[in-house]
Length: 454
Ligand code: UDP
Image 1 (tube, rainbow, N blue to C red):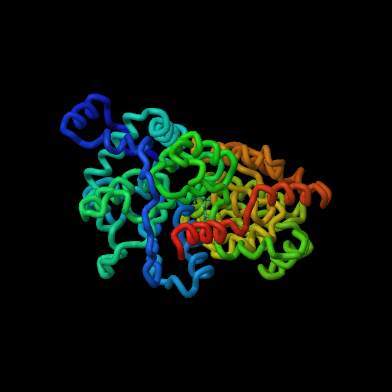
Image 2 (cartoon, rainbow, N blue to C red):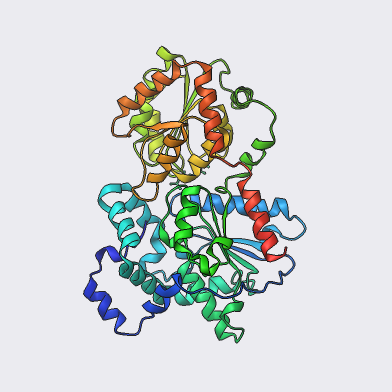
């Protein structure tokens, strides 16, 4: 989801804009500048933490929520529910007349046209520096006032400034850091004394370059692929390497205890099926389309559901917030072995109970599948942003790719897998777990906590 604006802007417009002293240069040079020292921090009590997101897809808010929960769990005496604020800086702090306030809607549209719209917009932002810079410039000028207020105050009621800002979105890094530096300079402290700023990358194995601004004080990435990319954009001479931590993707509290468990995956699976009041004697296949129930979930579910009796398994379809999908499926599928659900809060239990997960290659869902050791069939990916996630699954040996455009192939893959011995599932589970980190959220929070002196 990048450069929605720039897709309709032409180079002459950029030249025109830059001739009016819009600080394109100031922002574009952000990849080259670095505060020589990290900002000094004296955390207040309770420690005030601001998490920046844009609600594009379910993953960014889900990650921010999990980080908040981890701070509350790890530092119960230092933070409170109220001292950690999650802000959708685009929707809540951009001028209402601007398209920035409708980012989630624009994302939904772009993601629904992956090859036509998304791919081009993403690639332009990745490859064409001047367009990316122009978008930053536009964001800076249109959103400066509202965003500065968001970045320098906890809320309109609480005028205190945050002790630390944590970005969980690729488009909440460069401009916010520039605005924070400006605010610190204006206050006479000097830009090196801006609030500490950390980025927690919530993409998995492909990520847009906008995630990585080396002026930030620390970047957290989940995989080796992203560690390499981040390093290439954060020059070692500026301590890029020291700032970088490869820990994992922040996932919800329900997943945190998994690595403590002495129980085998098979026992966990049966316990989960019991908890879900499903048949412990049958394998469970789960279909999910991200938080918004995106992609061809209906066609996939209908195809797979056709063989529940023949193959003797049970099926759960999670539609997320997509109410239309749920009501359509309720009309097309009516079988006692098929459970159709809307947005659920127990994805961790459903994944643990599953022998097979069928999903788009969303970073959150795949990180959760890895943490629970769930063999996975990926059915689609957003070009650029999610392509590497499919590689992670396939190269990691814990699943395959079957396009959602060929649901019959998905059905036959499920059928083949269901005829495999137990060892087939156990091997894939072990490989999935090798790519997952159920404790990632707590570890990231502890690392940030130690860096800012909580
Ligand atoms: N999710 C959930 N309940 C649902 C459907 C999805 O909690 O009913 C969660 C899912 O567990 C994952 C997130 O939504 O954490 C989806 O994130 P992902 O990055 O996979 O896809 P996105 O929705 O951001 O495109």
